[in-house]
Length: 382
Image (cartoon, rainbow, N blue to C red; front, side, top):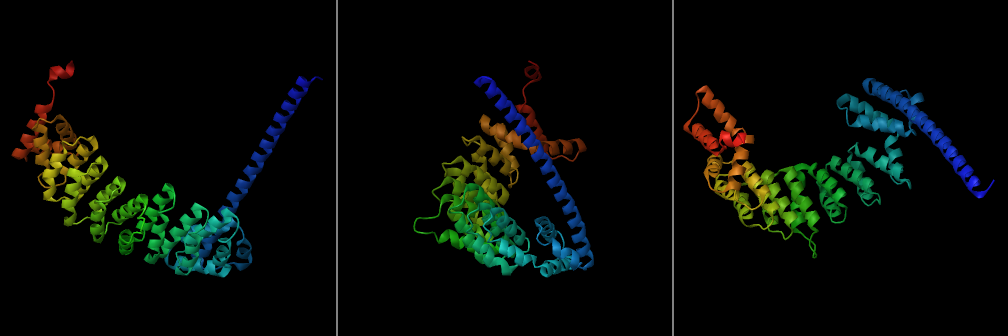
């Protein structure tokens, strides 16, 4: 046998061996998953019976404690039951010492065990676990830090909000986005802490991504006491911070925000800020915004024109401003106005009122204007 034949034989034998190994691994994996599924089904039924009747068959259940599948099932029930059933479930957790078992696991050297323990404890939302969650905020694994933050949010103590905001200074964009959702869960109680954190900036200033997160969080909460600090952020140097602040003012803004938003709509050099300012003015529905929004129909940026047209549907006399834009000479303003009059249902409602005989002069005028902008039939056919 020469070297080429030997190489071919070795290659063929290796391929056959690898195929056999892959098949054996696949079969073993199948049986492992099947066995896990059977155990899970057993635990779901057993825990459901315990919760329903409040009786704990100690001789059976005590042997399940070390099985991670059993613990997963128990803590999945935590988020789905309440009242008497939750009391029975808490009794089960106490009797089996599951809480203490998981607390030990949060300090395991094994990432998977540590992550699972923190995630399951986060479901309990017990103030006694706050210090543990704060400690895990320094874990080297981002997912562990994330579940620790969720646990703190479920505990509901807003004193930890500044600590979570500090994390946005150093975490990855993915983690920062998750932290924003977690901070919103604190609700209005978090607003004073966020406001103080924004204003008490370190000497080097806050990272723009952190300020953007703070602004988005305030918008997500929607508490109007945040309006002053969001107006301040409209003057931030970073355009993404200004964009987030402008967008947040749509939900957290008061009448005091209207003039600053109008100023941003007219003068900010970033189209994203102008677009968000237009949308927020529509949400605030203040009559002072009608004229500036009508002017924005001629903005160089397509997105700003569209958002300004959409906002005009919601502000006093905005429909009239859109109709005037349709009859005007600016083709971009006309297109934006026509599009919004169509998708907002204004044209259809006017047509239905005319058909039912309940129309007003404005309805007939609107349809005449729309008809005048349509190309002739011959042009359509060509």
